[in-house]
Image (tube, rainbow over all chains, first blue to last red; front, top):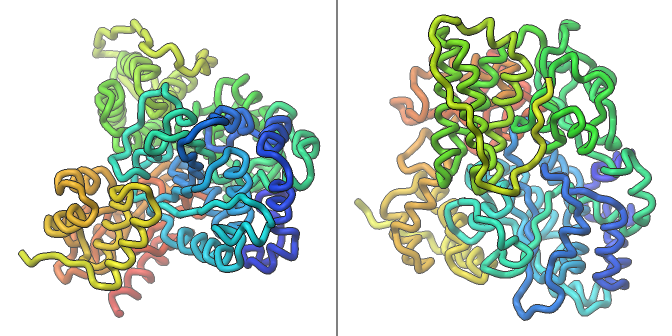
Length: 439
Length: 160
């Protein structure tokens, strides 16, 4: 079952795309009302593929119906989560379906302009998508000529915005600031983007993979999508397999595919038939699972939440039994320390401390109380920051140290005891309630 | 220091970027990309000129340049080697490659070789986890690497 990356040769060429029903979904959509489209996407159960797995139709319905302000769509192709490399496959192999999905989304939410934000490192993929976009403009599938092509009053423009190296710009409000030509600082919510987004106007932000799912839903109907995979998180997901795995890569499979199937059936198992020590199921910011926790775990938002992790961007990182987890965690912490935008003190300072404490343990100078200190620092970042980078930095530390307590205790001495303040309180009422620590 | 001016062609490109947005300053990232392409790095003069064109203050432009890691404020090597050492690459030998290149070229992170041919940068995840380990040289990705392949790539650039 492949919806987003169908197995069709040269699909990136417009004529090939057209011969496989390209832009028929857009035509079908423009014959219906925007509310009908939103309704179908809502009923299909499609959930965002960018990490939060929020209902796409519901997100669209937040856009105000009556407003004099221009509305905008941002397509999030910043893709900077370590372990995630799926959107670049869409830019390369199926760009026109992304563009068609963008048109339909613009129509549904009433936007005249869409920006596709792509990370700066993706020079090659920006060029590939720009080529596809230029072709679509030339043939009248995008821009003012759409009116003639589709015989409708609706038209919209699509532009590519190139980033320049900042993980935080994948966060939606930071992405908007970056698009406006500012430093990519996340904004305080509320107001939410649907009320106050780009240049203060109503804005919707969707992930590249989410948008690419739209044309097939319109063409084949919402019932069709909702019947694929897990009912609560239907459709296919682009799973990225990386780390200690024989056949790494992107696999499009129904949601709810077993994690063990991903690793052994599709990924070909672990090199040298080694045991799995640890798996991060959804990109580096999601809580890691122990090797003995992965049996029977399904890869979808609800099932992963039930075992104390999250789907994130479905970037599965596998680590074999010989992996140095302290090194891995120190590297993950270095990343968040580097990428913290510095706006909120708990994140700016906390990420640095996590990195320093982990390096102390790596140097063989850690003590048992350092493990409690790590959890304390992580817990004090969580929920106390403007955006979710705080959680992204805290979760791997908190869950890895908790779930691999024995492993970490072997790496520290018991001699020095530092008193650790363990009182945790969140200033933000909306902190994501994922977090019962489960061993 | 010499004044910086966009070439006529690049100025047109900047103007096209400006036309994409309702406000001029939204084109600042694109303008800086084009400037870096033309000038090799973002100098104070570049920031002055970009600020003038987009009706920003030079300090505002500096704020952008320092926030995004891909804008360089000093000249880098003709071939700027970016080595990913994030988790997925690290698990498959990213650090070995990083250390190997540093030794081979005898430079540290963000330094340039004496002949100005190479510079090296340890970068965060480039979205190449399924084809790890990887390096990027200027705009091009090189994936599924080992030390021999890395040597071949660097040698091929030395000969050019």
